[in-house]
Amino acid sequence: MWAVSRRTGLFIVSYVPLAVMFVVLKWPHGWDAEHLIRLGVAMLAVAALLLLVPAMVTVTGSVARVGISIVLVAALALAVVAALNGWFVPFALRQAGDHTSAATSALGFGFASTGLMLVALLLYNAQRAGGVYWTVTETTEQGAAVAGYLATYLLPLLAVGVGGWRVTAAYGIYLAVLWVVYVRSDQLVLINPTLYLLRFRIYDAQVQVDSESPHMQRVLLLSSLQITDGARVRIKPLGGDNHLALPIDDGVLEHP
Image (tube, rainbow, N blue to C red; front, top):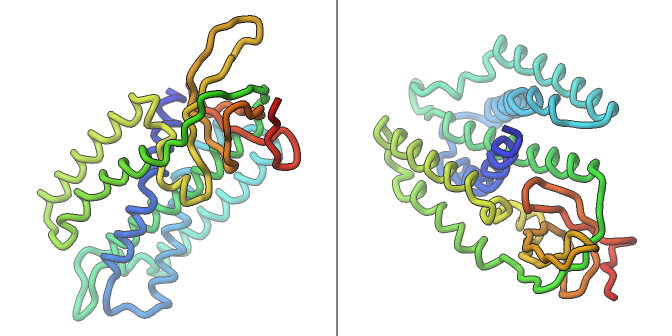
């Protein structure tokens, strides 16, 4: 269950740029900045509630748990204030006069906010885990695979000006299929455009996991540094064959 949840989180993260595109393309008309800012704050509170409630189960560290509890209480209070004071009014699907619905933009903003908070939580949990040291060989950056993954952004954008339940159902089926493929594939878990935008790189590398055995294993490494053959890195688990690669000391990768 944890593996599926983690992969689902990374799937959401991978579509943050697409969600931002929908925020821009479906920007509502007729509303002043104050109404839209309030709606954005309300959606941010809802996103925090949806994410941080289950996060309480997985986050380690007493300080982090207290911090999340405080944020949850604040988000809940903000959501109640928003509901009581009409901050969600622009979200309504039917609007009067020259006002258009902000539902699509608001949902895109909430989706993107959830994705960015997920990145922070995943990296925090990885940093808390115990680390090991590996020497990597046959490293290959997966930038081309990430570029190919961007093709999955195209279909949702083709009918961006068309509405109706049929389009919504089609998008739902499309995303459900992508989700099934994503969570069942080890090689797709870190193929993530959002992580590249956050200045991470993804490498396919070969490592000797057990120093007493000649067995070599191929893994995916997420790192903010350039990794070359022979580099020795500090490894934190992200689940399965996916790992966060950190420098040994002071941002410098060691080479034998």
